[in-house]
Length: 471
Image (tube, rainbow, N blue to C red; front, side, top):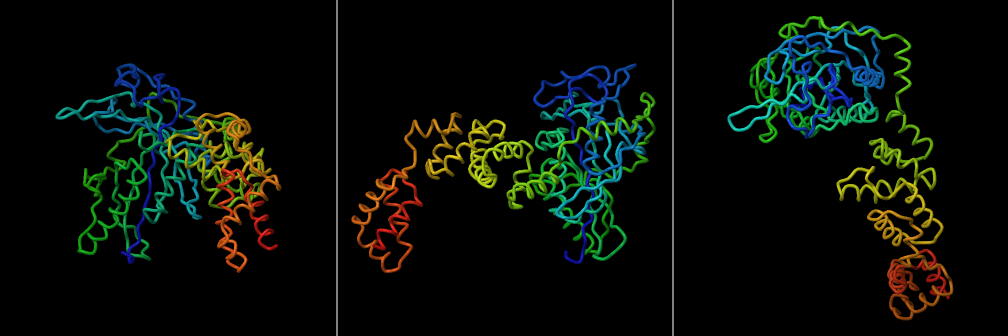
């Protein structure tokens, strides 16, 4: 397969988090809502019902375009995209075609710029529910604001397409534009895939793959379809321009229908909506709504906190995690905060299957806990115990230390006695250390820690051991 090059373009559909639908006042929320409860004459296309554009959806789409360095067009137009399907109540979809809201941007993926041709607005379809021999339709989702992000053909592998989607989701989450949850249908995508001989300038025949409802599905479907097309060409056949569906269970793509062209949809301007005209003042106001974006935040974390690229990557992945880290880092050593967040806190979040917003351990409490360790009030072992209590019950680290008697023993006199007892009880280990076997000292430190129920200051214990064994 190395003699072939894969060419990929992505169409990513993102459900926007607005209070109401794209062209009516029905609630946009539809997940786990009883079927056909969030509907009205507009979104079910009753005669005489007229659409009204959702202004917040325009803002979120423009913000997304700005985040990807797109140009926001001062004039854009909604059009009718005509096709018949049971979950499309109008018999057409209101979308943007020739004049989208945002054009010509890019997103950086693994150090390379992937072009974005357009970011535009449309309305979502309803949802078919199949029950045995029956197919039922739920129109709660029909009319929900849907943003489409269309890339150019710069992507070259399944892994690169995967990373591209991760970057898209990260940005829309930072903007508060969408949850980006593919499992709930808030983000869906199609991949347009072709292959050609390496070094060729002509594109191969493009095949669209649908039903990609997870990041894993995107990676696997592109890898499979690439292999399928290469096999067709190597066997002397021709790749046909069709629409394929991804069969997750079988791990294969299957032909659904011949590929439609723009002419098949018979686009024409939506007669019930005026063109969308925005001026410089509107664009400037929306630009001011942009938060600090992931790449800018990563650069700042590197210069301000001196963290490793690996730690920065996981800290800025989620906006809530980044905010949690920064709040704790304003009160304690940033590198120590990063260690606790990326190791112990992440482990607990994963085990309990919760987000950082549900953590009972506040950033202030984590900073206080780190301060207790740094000052020598408790050791690392005790700190993990305190962390566990705070995770389960919240509260004050100092109060937990006091209540459980976890304070570190740093009294030289008390520790000298414990060290002397450990040396006397383990003469063979002491002899090995005196003979130059330095590894054995860890055993004696462990004996002292055991005798003090884990409360001894390990660094001081080692210093006292070396002093006594050298005497």
